[in-house]
Image (cartoon, rainbow, N blue to C red; front, side, top):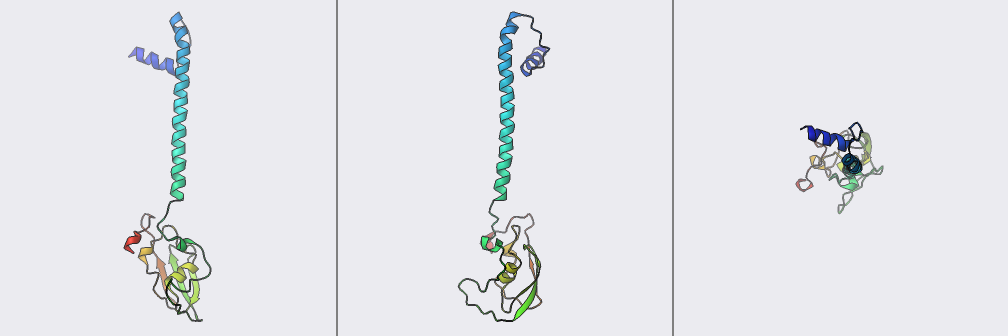
Length: 163
């Protein structure tokens, strides 16, 4: 056990530095190489861990949230109709209260006959943690309605295949 302790102390440079024999003089250069190799290995390992953490953080920030990108874009102009559907919006303005997982919750004026998607877009679109499956974006809205956009429990979107 003493010999193993002495070997580790020598490799790590914790010995007192006194050389008592010729074999120790020859081994001192070998010990210096081992110290350099051990130090380089530790630095390389720490660098690899730091790089892995940075890459993981960046990839999680840019990961797809599952929410359609057109719903995440801020837009001040409301959507007039869903694709492939004729617009039935009249000129009368109604007010709805949009709360929950949207960029800018609050009270918004939309045209009579508008859809939930129009109000959500007026509120700046969905946030990344929004659950688009938890609300019917195609339903028509009426004056004074409160629209609650739910968020997922863990911040991960619901399965779009289930919507």
